[in-house]
Image (cartoon, rainbow, N blue to C red; front, top):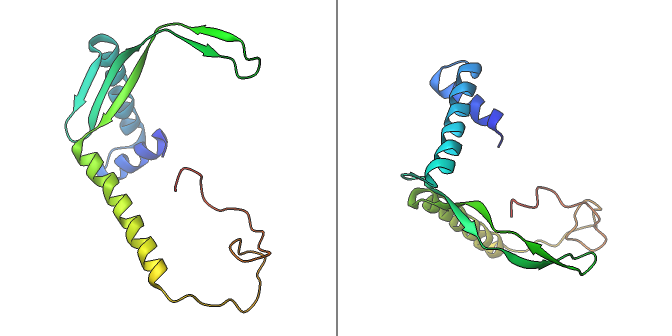
Amino acid sequence: MTKKDIVRTISEEVGLTQQQTKEIVQKTFDAIIESLVREQRIELRNFGVFEVKPRAARKARNPRTGEQVDVPRKHVVTFKPGKHMEAKVRELDEAEIRRIIDTQSEPASTPTKNTPDDPTLPGGNAAPSGRWDND
């Protein structure tokens, strides 16, 4: 989902124009960034906590040359999801487990022929579908 998708969804639900909604969303993001820079922490109930934390300097290795490199100390933004978000994500896991159990409990059907579009069958060569991050 992109910012444009968020704007479109909110605009349709609230009844504002997309331009008005875009300004509100952008102002919200700007306020979050400014608060992080100034106060180092934002706590949004039922959503989560954004926090700026220092990361210590360290020694790293360039994977291409093997040369040791000094990485300076820096600040990074971290996010810890709230209880509501954690519960919603947990529901995804539970739904996937139920789907796997349901799939395994169905009787296996014997394919009548090899179809080249089915990668699970011998000789199947279809490209994987979907996105890698939607496992």
